[in-house]
Amino acid sequence: MKKVNINDLVVGSTFFGTGGGGSPIFAHKYLKKLILEGDLPDLKAIEDFPKNSLFVSGFGVGNLAQNDSTKSLIKKCVNELQEYLKQKITGVIPVEIGPLSINDAFELAACIEVPVVDADVVGGRSAPEVFLETITLFNIPRTPSVVANTKGDTALLIETMSYKQEEKFYRDFSKLNNCTAYVLGYPLSKKQIQKTCEQKTVTTAIKIGNLLNQNQMQEALELINGIKLYEGVVTNIKEIDNSGFTEKYIYLEGDTFKAKLYIKNENLVFWLNEEPILTCPDLIILCSSDGKAIYNTDIKLGENISVIGAPARKLWRTEAGLKLFSPKKFGFSFDPVLL
Image (cartoon, rainbow, N blue to C red; front, side, top):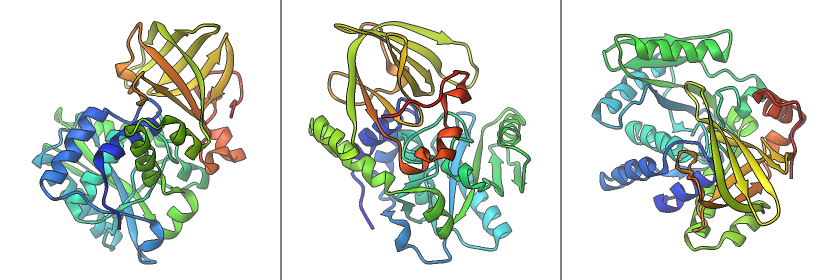
């Protein structure tokens, strides 16, 4: 078991969030509340759980506020899913490494009084689409799942034909009676997590956060084989109208080169003088002058930023991983460009 420093966790998960993963300000606020209430769960490596353990993930749909109503929805979902699976939940695995996503995992774990697993479903970073998860590489379903809304409705989703149908089901359910909802799903075994998920991604985020909080960027980059790719000033931000996503191009100018970045929630493609230099699934991180990663909604015109690159985890760099998490999935003609 490991106790967690939330300052390091938020800074590190923002770094690995690659511009997405939810607001670090809100994440810090909610995690601090868990500490004040004495409810912050422990972090535990997958190998330290019993053989027949059951793990889940959960998330809100429709701007669900973090309050007592959230807890009641979580408990309702937990009871329904445990009853259907005939098994007690023993741990929570984060969906991805991003500040608010990490908070969601800790909040869920606190509510049902279980540890958080030191791993995640997306593979050590954040991603904009549900299918961009390492479990997809192994055809692991995200169902059965339970969804409950704030009007008292509950539904069990046993199986769907596609992730798009699954997402539509959750969205439509949250819109029922114009309310918000909570989803509990991703039932995974210990063996499945060991095979299909990258390990120790949360502790890596904490280590990087600790180094960045001590202004040790170079040491942080050495730990993950990262490099500084570019430094320049934001000269233009071109927003793209895409409901449900933060999608835009960021234009930069430095001493020698012009640069461009494509964002769909996360930083996905980076160009120098119109040549793609680095793409997903490798990590592209924007950092401000204080050496901390920038959440993408906070990027400002005239801001001086550094562009950091780091290799993705091993599962993403397999043939199947590169095919799934490719720039071609976002409409570009080229294959992944990696460090």
